Length: 527
Image (cartoon, rainbow, N blue to C red; front, side, top):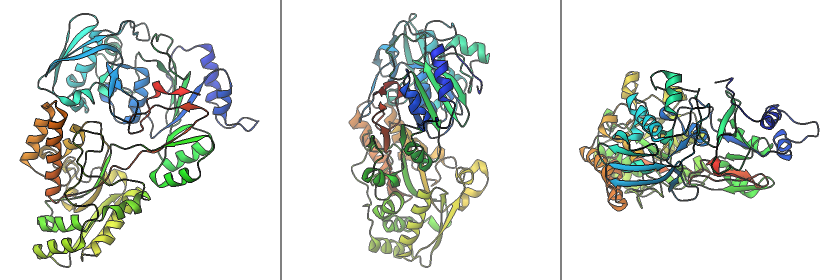
């Protein structure tokens, strides 16, 4: 994949040669701006990390899907804007026939590169079913998918074993909804399994012209594409994992679109770079302080409740996010079905009530440990909680762990370390359906991702029920109760969903994003 090339025009190749030269021109103009001044229009954007796969059926992270959205086609896609919604893409029609059957009809004329012909219902069937057949790690995104039935070249029916409400906001418009060429993938893999970083064919408005790991991925227009013309001739995406480094790259003119950190937001707002627009977006991620219910020191629910009530969330957000993040009411963020209006424990907590719970537990001189990652936000949270618990007589030791150690801390498959977890600062990414954030706290996830070792038969029942309910209000009731159960266990203190502020150069582009600021590059417009 490092040396992958696709047929592009001579003009695109000339532009690519300039774009990848690096450094500054003799005149002192950033190279990206010099390219802009030439005939073509180039979007220079930042990604949070490099690619690890380009196979949508085996994707790993959101930033990979940002690229996949440009080079493959889906039946539906996320609609740009401030509210979560979907719209048609490769399909001219999608309809729910009954709770377990969804009929689609494809647009005609969508072609695969490499001479692999037109995209048909046969490719849809192959693409969706291979995720299940090859036991992909992300097969949960397809839930109870059974099969896809083909009616003709352009029409098919998605058949589910049981109703699956998240299909509309996860399965179809996100990663596993991308359609790949059956012929091309079978030729490349022999069995239809993962093709990793070597896609054999594309069908979107762009193709990947070049990829140099840890440097950039370059997308150019697909000469076989007959749909709406995208806003840019080329998209150059640079992986910059450190947000502060991305901010510096933006200020230097090396990139024209990036997310910035919450603790930098006030600085950018008070003194923005020239020709810069700042937008504040919500985030789907969720952050919390968890407690290991199986640890001897935390088995008493009154101890856990004392900790819940001693934690002052606004104080934590001031310390960790410069006051730029809003308080969370649970694990489901605003704008998503199942978001709670308020938590059971008020954000500020109550130290006197916390002391009462400790008294009921008959505990004094309690010493505990809180684990956190090396990120500045995580350690700031841990240190603030340390100070807060000292006010009720709990001595808290902060244990800062590298990402490799922290990432598997509660997994039984990685040894006995899970037994030593007491308090932990945790954060999960999510997707725009409550199915995703709530799925990690069922009993089956204890010792995998459920590090609090929370067990509730009722919670598990509600999880199963909510997947089959189509009415948003009825689904919301179930997800609200699930978050109540988590909080009532005493094992969770919900903190924030953070935020996703972005900056972009108004003289270069008009962006289009999901509500959580992830870029929808196909809808970006050049200025």
